Image (cartoon, rainbow, N blue to C red):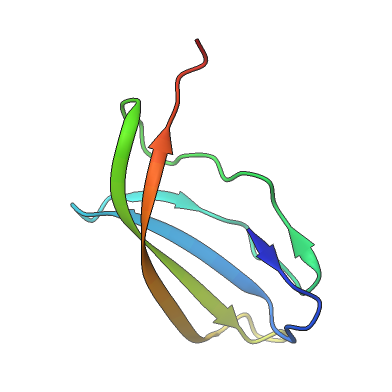
Length: 81
């Protein structure tokens, strides 16, 4: 996940499964930063899981949510084998 330098606001993303389980939550990313991966919060079996990603735009001073966008995503869980 990346927050480009052109964005003036910090962002944060949650990934929620179809059953409402919060599967992952990113740290707050200031502009011009990124993370390579986000650890799972729920134990999920290996495979493909349909989910929704919500990307929140945050006030840089208060951290208050100013708005968000959401989109369907496919979460792929792999084993370490």
